[in-house]
Image (cartoon, rainbow, N blue to C red; front, side, top):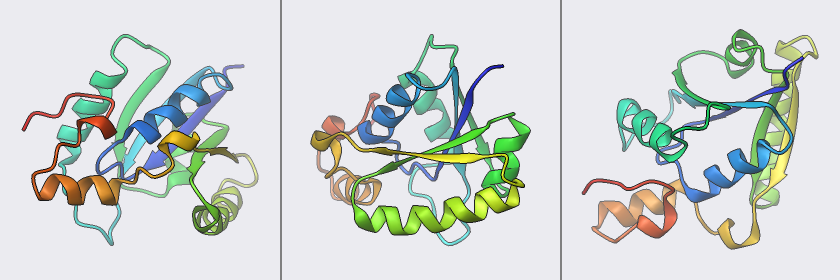
Length: 153
């Protein structure tokens, strides 16, 4: 049986920290589905279409990775892709508190069929957040060091 993991997030933008979680996840799982979710409480900075294209370009040629976007409950979408696991990256204890609550709900919604696996962010990537990268980009700073793809300016 294929071990499939679902990696959900708004990925606005998808950073080297996110890419690190995907690459390390592939050591544990046969396939990773990157799900760009719609967060009803956030207005996107980068469009879903652009981010989907850019993430696909970062993993071009690796058939173990799929990139989708969705507007539904994470546990439901993970089940639709036959994922038995949800992977999440943790940078700090604040991330853990937030992610732990969500993982409990996802497990309940999936009738205990989906486990969440937390991966600790690599130390050199821990300071990177999409929020900071968006802010830097908004004011014209070079963000190429934070992204696993080339962003057209």
